[in-house]
Each structure stands twice: as structure tokens, then as C-alpha cells.
Amino acid sequence: MDDQPLSGAALLQRFRALDRLLSEYQGLWRPLPFTQHHLPWESAHPELARWLRSRSLEQAEADHHQPHLLPAPPPWPEVARRCDVLSRIGELPQHPRPTPPARLALDVPGRKWQQIQAFAASLQFRHAPQHWLDWCAGKGHLGRLLAHEGTALTCLEHDPQLVEEGLRLSQRLGLTAQHLQQDVLAADALERLAPRHTPVALHACGDLHVRLMQLATRAGCRQLAIAPCCYNRIATDSYQSLSAAAQASTLQLSQQDLALPLRETVTASARVRRQRDLSMARRLAFDLLQRQLRGIDDYLPTPSLPPAWLDKSLARYCQDLAALKGLPAPDAATDWPRLEAQGWRRLAEVRNLELLRALFRRPLELWLLLDRALYLQEQGFAVRLGRFCPRQLSPRNLLLLAEHP
Ligand SMILES: C[S@@+](CC[C@H](N)C(=O)[O-])C[C@H]1O[C@@H](n2cnc3c(N)ncnc32)[C@H](O)[C@@H]1O
Image (tube, rainbow, N blue to C red; front, side):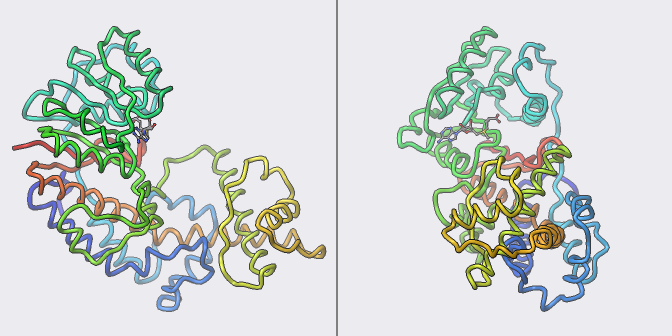
């Protein structure tokens, strides 16, 4: 399969192939190692389960970004190969842009600046945009980069502080941009869109970018560009398919399933990783304990806890969390060092078992993007889907370009 952006008939073709893959293997990617001590697929593939469970936390960490290369027992090689082939998607052609004035980048964090530059360089429409509409704009950094040479710009954002900050930045640069406070999910959001607008949305979460596709279609916009993120941030319990092809699929996706593509993270600092691992090892140790305390061999959800909880001893942590959940106090004779070691062991197993789910992160993300692409195609747009920046810059690096032919 060519490493090209997808367009035309290839969109539906790839969607169907991914739909078959995800449906066939749902027993492998749906179950969560963090909450389930024994995963249903382990009975069918005991050798693979043993192999993954015997590995260390460091090994899991090292393979986080390339699980398809693991030399694991069957059915891994075949599953990994199929996932890898169907995950491939080419980079959108980058169009050289005039170097923006350095002062534009002044208030933009480094990685965000690189993302918006890559996003801007990937835009190419048959008709030159007359008026950019930055959707869920934050401070409007993307809009400013696109419009700094004089094209009109409107930024829509819900958070009044970001609206104010955005306006201040635009004024300082002498740009006549409008920064409007708008809840894009509200009924009056449609009034903000007009046929002359070219909407752009960088990392607008779940419902927010879906809303843009629906409203831009109704308002008669001729072209738009969307790089989605946070597919699980939706108001409904399960995913509402957009295109006819996805509506005909038997796949039902819960919010938990929709979080799978977000599990690929950019490499965090050693300190952040240590904190994250400690927090998870603690939770897993508590999970072992709470099963004994309740006499029920089942996961018990716990709230997110302030970071200061990690400064407590494991004993105090578990006692306080048990009290918070209304459970009986742990036995005074509890062997805390042993429980601590078990928590870390469980964490290594969970992380390695997660690598199997990781094979499906990108296939599921592409399935979701293709549902959006096919929906826009049904609305009469010609659509291109491809990468706009390297994954190291952002794992959410897929961009949908749509324009009326
Ligand atoms: C992940 S940020 C992306 C911001 C910007 N596009 C960027 O790439 O830097 C998502 C933005 O959506 C805004 N937002 C969240 N809910 C919204 C809503 N209902 N209406 C408008 N904006 C919203 C948030 O305040 C936030 O600024």
C-alpha cells in the first residue's frame, strides 16, 4: 500500500479494510489490562500472554512508539503486520510560505509554533481564502499566522480569558482580527459562519470539530481544514457515526474505546515519567488490596488524587483511599513492602499487555478520521486526508482538507 495521502475512492476502500480489521480483532484491543486481571484473549493465546507478562517496565516503555516491531509469539506478527499496513498514510504536500515575522512567534510555546507552521504549510485550496475562521482558537495563534499578511480573521473561543489574551496579541501585532467569545456548541454558533469563511480547527476536541463540519456544511463554506483530537470528548455515551459507511458498520464504540488513539503520548521527561509510573503502581497496589477488603474480585474506580498523595507512604495512601471509598480499614498486619512490589510488578505487566492494544491505536484513529472524511464527501466536498507534522511534534498529526470541487 502506497504511503500517500488518501482521497477519492481510496477513503471508502481504506475505511472498509480498517472496519474489517477492527471488528475481527475487537477481542484483542477492547479489554483493558489496567482494570482486568485476566484478559479474555489470554486463554486463546497463552504463549503470547506469558511472553508479554514476563517483560520489564523499561522494555514496555522502550517499545511504546513501535509495538509493531516486537518479536512476540503468534498471533502478534500477523496482527502487527496488518495493523501497520493499514495505518500507513502519507504526508500532505508542504507548500513553502513566506517566513513569518519573528514577533508572531514570541508568545507561542515552541512545539505549538512548529505545529501551526506545519498546519499552515499543508493548506492548499483552489480558491485563495478570503476570511479565515479559527475554530476553538485558544489565543488564536494559528489564525494570526495564516492572516498576518492581511487576510481577514475571526477567532471563536469559549474561554473569555483566552479571547481577551488573543485580542491583546492581535492588537499588539497591528492585526484587525475579531476575537469572539462563542460556545461553538450553542444554538447561535451557526450565525458565526458565512460562505466566505475558510474555517480551520487545530486540535478541537471530539464534539467541537464534528460541530464545525456540520455547521460549515449548513452555512455553505466552500473549504475547511481540521486536525482533530480527543475523540472521546463527546456528550453521548457511545460514538455517533457520521457517514453512511460508519453507520452501516457493526462496530459500537464506547467513550473508553475512543480514548485508545490518545494513549500514544509524546516522550515525557524522566521526572514526569517517574511520577506517572509511581501514581499508577500505587493505584494498582490499591486495586489488589481493595479486592481483598471488599471480598469482590473486581476493579473499583477511584478519583484522581492531588500529586501530594504520592508523598505519603503506601500504607497511609491505601488507608486514606480506603476511607475515601468507604471501605473497611486495611489490616494492621498488611505486608506493605510486599504490596508495593506487587503494584510495580502489575504495572510492568499492564504496560506490556497494553502494547497489544497499542497496535490498534492508529487503525482506530484512522477509522474515526475516515468517518469524518466520508461524511464531508457525502456533503459534496472533495477531501484529502494525510499527515501534517511528524509524530514527535504531535501524535495528533492527521489533517482533513475539504473543498467544494
Ligand atoms: C486543545 S485547545 C486548541 C486551541 C488552539 N486551536 C490551538 O491549537 O492552540 C481547544 C480549545 O477549545 C476551546 N473550547 C472548548 N470548548 C469550547 C466550546 N464549547 N466552544 C468554543 N471553544 C471551546 C478551549 O477553551 C480551548 O482553547
